[in-house]
Image (cartoon, rainbow, N blue to C red):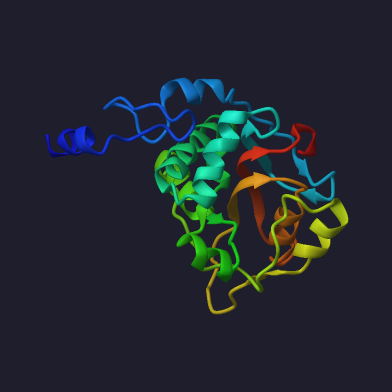
Length: 223
């Protein structure tokens, strides 16, 4: 009753279309979720074949997806954590449907720089991972992987500078004991794939298996 009363005074709007949400909807309306045209890709290599991984899943394609782009903009720049969680749940459904959950022991969100975390107040991949975790019932660990410096945004960089920007910039926290083998790396959007490559390369080789899950990719042929 209290929630309904608050919604009458401060109604929630969809982060995709801006229309008022029904009481049964959260952050993103059903119509926008349908319009986002979900799909997944599960080939066993990523970053143009340079990494061998167990599996990879996209929930959506970023290109030609205006609704998704608007929602992700709300998540990254307008502090819309509710939408990040909802999209994380949708990604979790893809992971549950397409991946071998027995090969996933822990979820590790791709970290952002301290500068971005301070500016936004959170790491959007952490919130997305919470949505995924709710669906697949696997624990999250945000203390394993960290980013060493405040690097510039990847989206508008060309391929060489994307690689240079993140190469060797992710590290493992040596104070954290990792007693697992199967890791699910969760990110918001994969552009060139170099961030994922750097994250995977931060771990000792041939010791862990990696599954990759991202809300969206710029090009489905990347995976």
